[in-house]
Image (cartoon, rainbow, N blue to C red; front, side, top):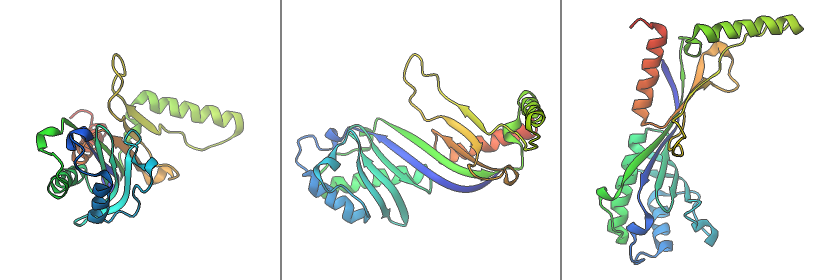
Length: 222
């Protein structure tokens, strides 16, 4: 497996915004102005409708130190921060940002206030291993489809599995996580062996699972 690019490294800190400003002492517009100045965001809330925490108060394209922050959103019960470095970096920036805002604007914050963390990792990679043809049954089905289509119209294009998805059981409770997917990269020829994958995991854990899956497909006896 060869990593091509990290497309999204999202960390979500589940914490109620009311708990950060329990008595309303911190004036929201001043806090927003401070965040924009600290991060240098290029797009940020400017009118009343932009401050709806049910939809997410959104800031776009800024920097924290040497890391570009693609998106920062404030929800009523969570903070979301996206980079293209790693979920560990995104989490670090949330934690450091909260500590900074606590000092600068008098927010009430302690690390134990974050009840849990969530993650979404999107990346692309190359693999010479036929990771989507792990099953003989699916390979036979693809070959059968290729033959059947050829008999209908003479088309000799190859057919292959293009998507593999795992999802948590939505019953009895609503699914809490993004699916784990591996799929052919859109608009890229099969011959380039390029894939896209999404996982509800930290970046490092996502890559480790992909590497293990590739190894298992390559040599299922191990």
